[in-house]
Length: 361
Image 1: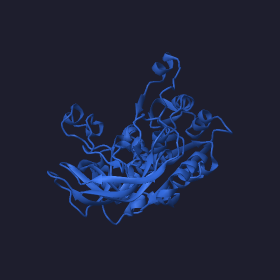
Image 2: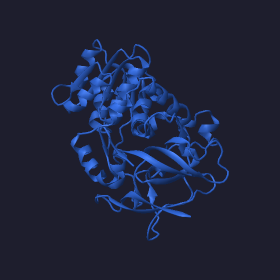
Image 3: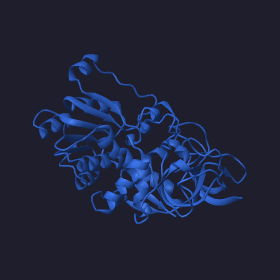
Image 4: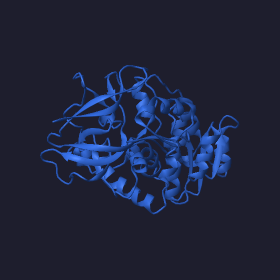
């Protein structure tokens, strides 16, 4: 049986999204259907709309979501109707070379649902990050469902499905921030703000947030930044060195994805410090720096994919911290909106008005 639902569709590069009828099939082997309760409007969805990911239109947008499983397909174990889940886009395979080496957070063969959701005329949809959760229901691989405590509201829990996990993980998992470290974060939007929260959770003693938007710097302060640097008014490299005793930070996180801010982040490190790129560049961007500087500064240059998270390990733990009052996920929810307001949410994102707009179903 096929179920008709409403979903947010991107039909062409740069075109405004539309809310259309989406046909969701019953789950096949290894699949699950989820009633979506809330889904964040992420910058990655805007990348999909604008052609920054691929040209495989039309897309069913949305991937940062929580909801309830309504049906599972043949062979699915450990998941049943009624389970409250966060959707993830890293359903680890367990057998690839990364998984076999005990590094499933690098899984090279993550899987999605085999069946396709379609438009009413039969046109197949490409679900964003294999999820497509800006819809009343969605079809995913069962491994994309991570069970968590149902006491956590979906508006907060769903954010772990992408942006918040990416930022927290960039600090804790990729950057390895630990007690007493000094940390700097370039870009205090949703991902950068989450990196600041992660650094605070890990026990960093100095956390410097860098942005050009005073509102975002205020949010950074509220989430744990000890210093706020407006890069439009002062040199962020010098400001970070001043805040860290003249040395630079132990861990610097670049959450923007631009060559100029990456260069600044590189020179903001202490000797042998770690630089983590979690901001997503566009394909045409290039970096030109003296190779000698990479040698002489030492340390580690890393990229963080999904915060190097393992959803089955990290999502339940972070929800527990949220319920204990130690991780303020609610602070990231700037606005709750309807499915018909996603295009307006993209505009608010461009203006810097929100950390995250969340569609509530």
